[in-house]
Image (cartoon, rainbow, N blue to C red; front, side, top):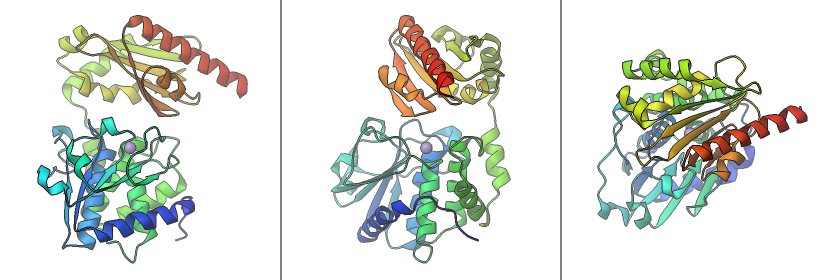
Length: 328
Ligand SMILES: [Mn+2]
């Protein structure tokens, strides 16, 4: 099969990354706080590839264990003293303050592998590609770039497949390329159950279904296609939820007819709001950047200190929709 990689310009950096990995006997891999399947998939998938290729190397995946993602993999215990003689790799993490774990600072060499827009440079070697669907796609692409060198296993294939499915919302989002599909197809030739992974990722907890009901009921949509929902601490408490359970409603609200741009505002215990912003076309990460956040052009996060700032964010989103409809 002809591989459709559009990442040819990444070849030198990919070679650098693997050359550095080859040199180190101990490698510790980090990813972002509040991990999603792509964070765990890229982190633990890379760990499995290195371990399968070089069984003599010590390779660790570190960070907090998350119950909901335990079906993917478990984290390793890594003590502080291991870092002095270790290479640190950070996957799927745009900025330093989002790295889960503190000891990475002690390592002599760092590598960053990420697909978010570059808003914080770190690591001697940075491999950043914002065109790809997910960080897991980058790790699988690394394997397909040096298939004679790097060994794939069923466990790694399962992790990387899960990461791609997670970040593309099962191949729905725009960043899903023909090459993404080829990579997924290659991974599926390894013996793991992709249906089991897909079903696991589709599970909704009973309390989340209650939140979905609330969100669909209370979602407000303006004539110009800007939708929003506000989840106050009182609402979360009444549904027995906290902020970390709220991400599931974000793609759901985008399915409502007429929605062009949408925002999910979640009040934190200090009264301020965490804002998740999504778009089907107008660029919204500029709005996120105006409010202490950032992210992808069509999927960003921001912070607002009070309801007044939420109104300001909605105004700016409306402006983006207006500019967009003028352009197109
Ligand atoms: Mn990701």
